[in-house]
Image (cartoon, rainbow, N blue to C red; front, side, top):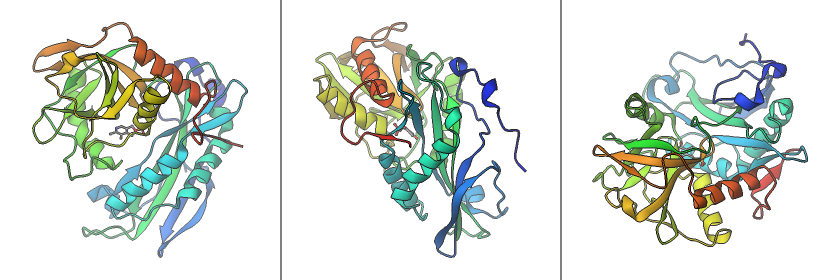
Length: 345
Ligand SMILES: *Cc1c(COP(=O)(O)O)cnc(C)c1O
């Protein structure tokens, strides 16, 4: 079973995209008879599940996204993995799934990194090892109930930048669709949110934009987030502002930038409304997330008009500084706030 394993010698570290690779090892554990069992590393990259699995019919699936970074001293480290563990637990609670114990989650992530250590890209390439924890409802309960069996897996793949262009600005367009409702599943990292975002994302791509920006599902007056990254703006009077809404996915990168903006860059930083008809208040804007890191937003198209923030070709100074500080901490060249990085040994 399994697909063709990738050979580490065939990897071009400087030209990685965001594409699946079948690495030697992944972690799996199975939930059966009320407990997590047979946890460990396996080579098989395929899953064998019942056709009646709730995940296939009703989308009972939650996931996470995180990265391992190689430092100049050749150490490998994780960025705030405890936050991913805590968020996955919350996502599980929303979909009535049995959370994988939080401390074992971080150990499992580390075991996957260690087992595939040669696939953590060299320092200096900007590339990282992306980790994808995933939990799905399996077993043969075709009725609309929570599954009685689950699979938890963590696989890994080396990645470059998610939005083509790296730290160069991209343009977005506001969407007429909604990603999530205020009391729906927007706060949870669940597969269904992404299924709902495929069509709006496709329409944005066809019009030449990197992705779409969702507005609040009630009035369509406030910015919520990009399909896979949170939004932030820098106001003309130097406030780092990121939208506050119950339907936004609480990005760990976003909360890290809020803290860094205030404590390292000396800006005022807040979660508050970002009105789409007041974009003139902002001199810079960006999309942030583990995969996207920071993608500077050149322009945002809304109602047929492109609003340019800093520039469509150049990155603003505050966005650059945030990017340097964040990635410096992640790659171990800038001092990390207490507890933010964990070495894999
Ligand atoms: C994962 C995700 C993000 C980014 O969260 P990070 O914790 O920063 O990686 C943003 N928006 C959505 C919808 C997401 O699923």
